[in-house]
Length: 309
Image 1 (cartoon, one colour):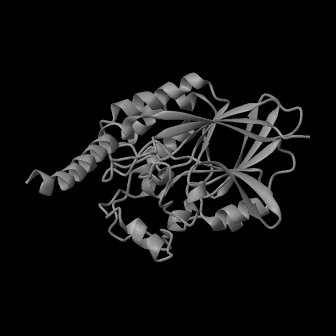
Image 2 (cartoon, rainbow, N blue to C red):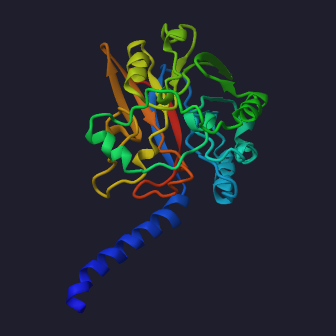
Image 3 (cartoon, one colour):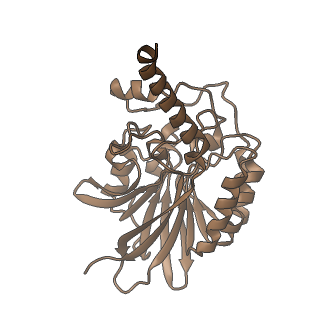
């Protein structure tokens, strides 16, 4: 009897332990990633940029709120929020509370699909099926007519009142001491709200640096930013793969970006140009899949430094 059932029971126990770890520990094991990106003109001082993404706030997530609030202690020069702040239509006050200390710093933001629409219960395996079918998790249609609409407007108003710049299919500027920073942002490509034609034209000549900002790093968007000559693109959306295989990495990206670039700093090439791309693995999950494995929740402190001469 022991020989007959020992192996299946061991496998089941290991699986249960993995789920308990992913849902009970790693999903709350918040980390700070530090990255250096050489994109500034020679002679310009370093800039410290805090990127937060994919918070997916649900009511009652006190540890996440405290951790986000603590990031203000990093004293960044500015903050970039790459969207998907919500996973609960009643969590807007908690998002604003969590980001309140960071809103004391200059910032810019874009929204993701989960800011606009409430989460749905879906089979996580569908992402693997879509990848196998060559669909790469593409979502070419607007959300369903009966989708739950999140009250994103008060969140936008709070960001705007704090002085953060809304980059929804538009450009924006920040001035830090003698540094002129330009940003070009897009609404979420995952639900086809991006309108690059409204912002095309490339970096602004009188800015020290121009940065592209978008929630989901779809290739059409990365190609456009890079072809126009942006030195740096910031994105989120992928959750770093969320459920990864140790020593292998992510299985999916939930967009058409390759899994080798699912999180962290990489490069993108288009039309003879090369841009740095940073994709945040984010610090949350959809409320219906509250697990992470081999992919801890994170924010990133990017130090922008001068390019090599």
